[in-house]
Length: 245
Image (cartoon, rainbow, N blue to C red; front, side, top):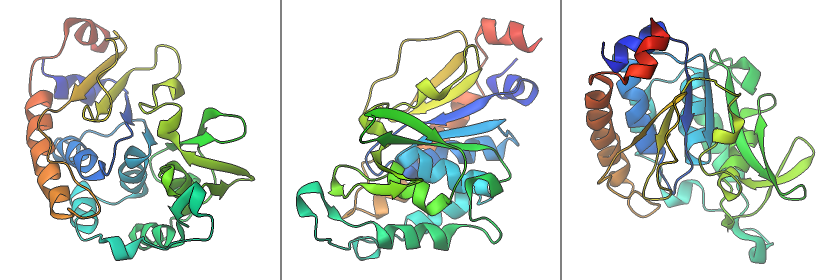
């Protein structure tokens, strides 16, 4: 049985890691799932993973995301604020970008057709937390507020920054023995220790996107989509196969 066959039968959670401007890579992974009609029972994302995963959970296709994200330019989110020691950008323009990408009828996380959790780092409690309710744009602003680049974001009565500060993988949000498929951005963080309740994929050689290299977003999308397709079409590990049966 192939990995895609197991995932078609067994409920799974999709976890997308943090990584510098890695949303195009995550969209490529989601496209491979989408091409095979595979849909997780819930989505967990941190930083770049929260941006791609939440918009996909909201109803955007992976291909729409890749096209839209490939058009983002620095002027679309550069809004220098007064608190420069804490970060260059306020994040207001970033929130407007997110709002423009949301499907009609989706404003809050709980409006998403697919249950989704957004990983943030609570500045004062100094810990990773998962948001599952509240305004999508505010949650994604906080989750993507990379220290030094963005100023801390106010969300649900707390100050927060990029969830990757405390858990770049987002795996701490999983329940014990919850079966998950984890897409890592291994340029930012290596693969974790293997677990029988989780499949990990980290694709080598992904073109590095960035604010001054928007074309790399689409290159990363196609690179990961191809690699993830081959991974999903490969034989499944035996423990997962036994669980599916």
